[in-house]
Image 1: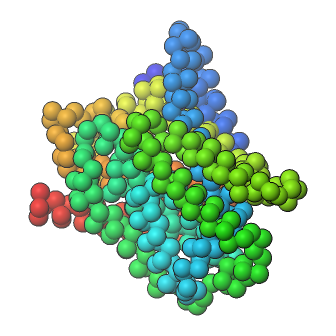
Image 2: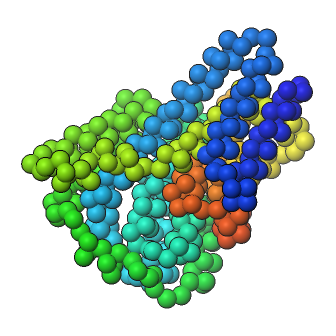
Image 3: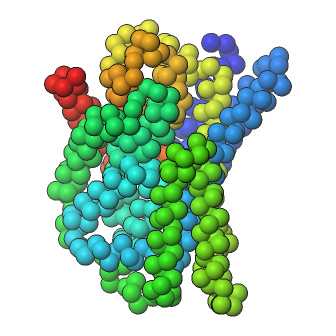
Length: 429
């Protein structure tokens, strides 16, 4: 590793520290992330004798990153449009309990299974938006949001379309859809159940100032409008994985097409209203309300990771880890911890490059265990997964609060799920 790569690593660590200490240094994490990403690429290109090649690498990485950002923006807009129509009242009406324990179990299981059908990022956005309607107490809402992150990542790990890393392995031919579901469902469920049971013992009483007491008095849309936008919006979100499987286009294309469809639909159902009356119910208004600082933070994190990947730092680290650890199970297990710090996409991509299908054939335990560890290990830190970053931005979850209140729960779940998988593997192979 050359000196410039060492400097890039230090810049990344310094930027990472600035993000972690956002409330101490009083600098928004989006600014720290963007500066870190730009500095990493600047150092990379000025140290190169072929800047054109580096620029090409950046544009190639930006293509993948922009797909994630457009997906995030589209999902946020659809969810915001549903919220503006009071659409989440439909779900809240199905949740009759205000008891904190019962509500937590309902929210977590709904997140777990919805994440497998949609994906953990979209599901987190939907569920955090729902929590805003259900709970007004900040501490309760943040605790529930932390559990949503664990549930979303656990639910995404056992589905070929639930988490981007599982999707990578599925598309790459390392796993098959039915096998990954059968092998990882129980470990993923255990990963959620352990922290869920522990938190349940700490909760008492009912949620305060919830939607159950006050939203029905503040509805500004008709039942038809609420139902139409809610079900059309959910249809758009469910349409994304179907669009991907039918067209083989990236998921963001399905999300953008769905956004276009619901845009047309919302204009149609409000066509007889005056502009001043329908303004709050339009997609244009929803676009103004989405959290752009969170999207810019996401952009900064992703371009920083892309710089580490393009310079070969991540692949070099993977080789060193392979030499030092030597045991495949321990290597994959440690990737789960690394995914809490470094984005799991390049980690899994590096692992796919390190281990070939000739040595480790389709549905080998390595690929299954990698899917579990990379998918659920991101819950260990709030910035360790796309769902965590989304929740962090939407609910202003502090890094150290999450580390103190949620990380140890996520760790127990991660360890229990890994043990469950290893036990399952030793019994049925």
